[in-house]
Amino acid sequence: MTPKRPTDEPDLLKELNLALSDESPLAMLSAASTIGFAASSDAEPTPPMPVNVTTLRSSSPSENLMQITSAMLDFRDPATDALLLIWSHIFDDEFLRKRIRSTVKLHKSVPRWVHSLDDIAPAAAMSIRSPLKHEETIFIEYSLAGETVTAAVAVTRLGIPYLEDAYFTNDTIAQVRSFSTGDPEIPVDHIDLSLADARAQVAAYAEHGDHMMPPTETDTWPSESLLLMWLLELLPAGGTGAEVERPSEEELRVLVEEFLASPWAKGLDNEAWMHAERIFDLQVDYGTGDPLRWGATMVNMIMGDLYPRKVMADENFLLSLPDVLRGLVQFANERSGISEEFTRSALEAIDEMLPDYRNAVSGKPSNDPAAALGLPPGVEVPPELMAELSNLGIFPGDLDSDEDDGREEFDWDPSSFWKQRLIERVGSEETLNSLTADPLPAERFDTAGIAPKVLPQVEALAADLAAFADAHFQDPEMTTAVLRTLNRTASSNPAAFRRGLAHEPAIAALCWIAGKNNRWFDQMDEERTIQTMTRAVGTMTAPNSRAQTMLKHFPRAAYNSDLDLGDPELLTSWARADIIEDRDELLE
Image 1 (cartoon, rainbow, N blue to C red):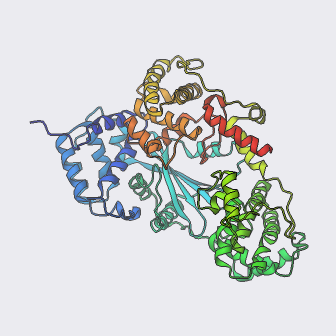
Image 2 (cartoon, one colour):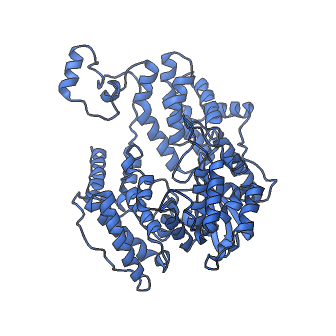
Image 3 (cartoon, rainbow, N blue to C red):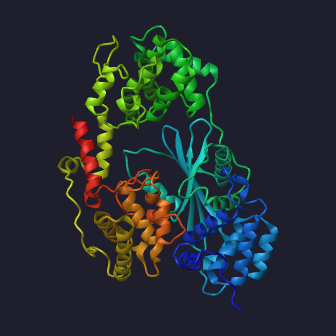
């Protein structure tokens, strides 16, 4: 009698075979971690409880996991056998390991890397850190049967630094370094790490992340945590952890005195020293620990939350903060020597936060009528309703009053930063100025520029891709955008489309690229999430790793949170209309 499949999900075996046939080990490793993570809970608690990722690997296997393991051992398929062998590594349980390895006999068709899991070896580690020190990504490269597996661990370094995301890529450390130095407008610091230090730091960041509420959740984390924790334990122990260097009280006192003696404090009132002390303290306690590096993120934290909430003082004192903060930012960033771009963005943030900050400390309602009425920010309130509410005394009629409050107004133009962001989306200022919202035409897949050696498999992929895009996006323009994305990626990196390419993961990656570039995905709409798209494609692996490979030779900023391809021909009419609206608002 033929054993039943090891799960009620009918497509699991197909997906595992697709992952196993992929040219890179990442697809199968990611699938094994994701399935193992999901199977590690016997039941879904109500309400859901956060998972302790740092101890999950060494915890006793759940009843659910053991049942799935038994079913797979009986089923005996090359794909499930490969998954089980990966589980014998990523789960640190001696009984599970012996049971799997004594039973599984790998078929000769299984890729060589599956046979070589015992020999996976770490090669190098490096950190890419923002000059502001508020975020970094640690990369740890491993070699597996001649293939590269690199862990990328994104860390937020505000307050107590913690792991915010983690994913895997085929890029080597050398390639990551090359990509991240290609854009001079996005400066980063490269820090070579010993393998022991990389282990100590990532372990500490992950442990800190276990205590975050709400817990961190992304497309790849914590579903790939089992894989990361296993690979982390292959690194040597004894490294230096993630301690943050913070100045002493005496060092902060000297900084305050030096600021007050600098030209940047000229004209400030007698309360400036008290503000400077508090600002430096808040940066040290809730920021990066370095009081001499300032950007928009910390300014927003100071003015939008920390100062109004934590500083108990009268209104006049609180209203004098922005002047002091403006001078202190320029003093500190000049002293540390970081890029002037960070100073500009911090000053723009002060100007943008000023109205809401004044309202917060004075108890006045927001200048945004919608917010003042309890509506979502930015909702347009009809003038007739505003007038009626004003007549009834329900809504003040002078929110937009230009009456001089006796304070100096700044003439800084906050539009330059946002204009640059729009330019990045379309490629150039000239393109931005001439941009139109004409719809993308429905069109057949264009094979121009694609190398003949990969053209047959790319054309076959295009047919499946078009069918899926039509059904999922239900927008002919998005289908065109997806097919054009396939043309651009296949033309620039034919190696990513070699023979044997599994269609489902490739479709998910291309739809992810086009969707992110067009701002199509929406976590608040279940039908428009990345997870819904990948499930509809029929794949279990997150699409971003494969997408990074496809985009390897694309002229764009690497490892950026936004995906901007800089080509209006890849943008739908509604995406371009949003850009045009933002452009016109900046011009006003």
